[in-house]
Image (cartoon, rainbow over all chains, first blue to last red; front, side, top):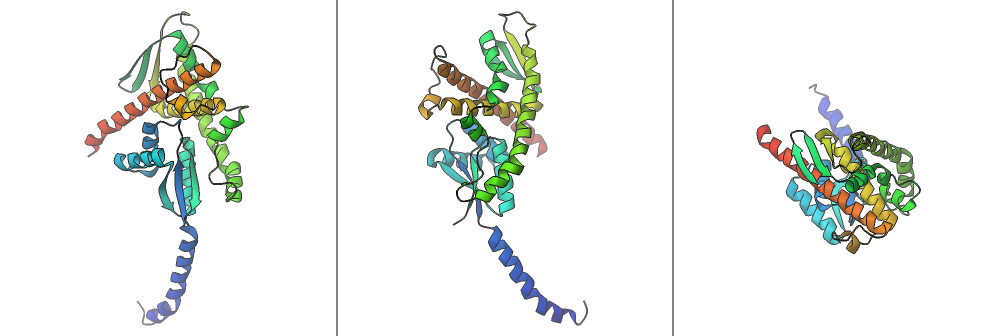
Length: 103
Length: 174
């Protein structure tokens, strides 16, 4: 590292950090919600959660029961692009899934 | 009717002509054509259209065609397997259907679409859907409810077999 490097870093670093935080705050507040559906089988829904989100069986079943009993369950939250991809996969399995902004 | 797994194949044997006909109807039942309620259920909105208007419009334009392609491919696979129940067999003889395990995803998809489309078309209530002992003899609505339950039974069998196969594989992988 050259002798002048710390000076350059000290000037530029705060700007880069600030931009990154702004981007994250715009991207983060999205969640994937699965809604109850009387037709889809409970075993099928739990299997889909395992496949799409990589959840272990117990966690997948917990979400499935939450959907069944409470009408909906938040399966994942994070950036919009990924949430959209999850919902697309869930629609491929015919689950009633939506993307919502986190309040 | 008997269901069992034979190595890499899911076998449904002793299928009587009535159930064979219901199986043949899977591709047609999975097609939501001309039934707006079924179309809406199979291609549901990704968000509240009132809140995320732009997202829903983009979804229709870019994602829905891809979903239609996936569903069409699954239907084709199921149609090919269903050729085993062809007309060349004796009219009242029981049949056997062998589903290669690699086609099980397509079957799950087509069965699920058929169940959802029928349920949307006939607007079945949750109580009706839970009534597994209702006789199929009667109206077209009763027959369709029986179809939904019969397809659900097959779906359950495939899910269970897939689960068993992943459990069988797991110890060897570790």
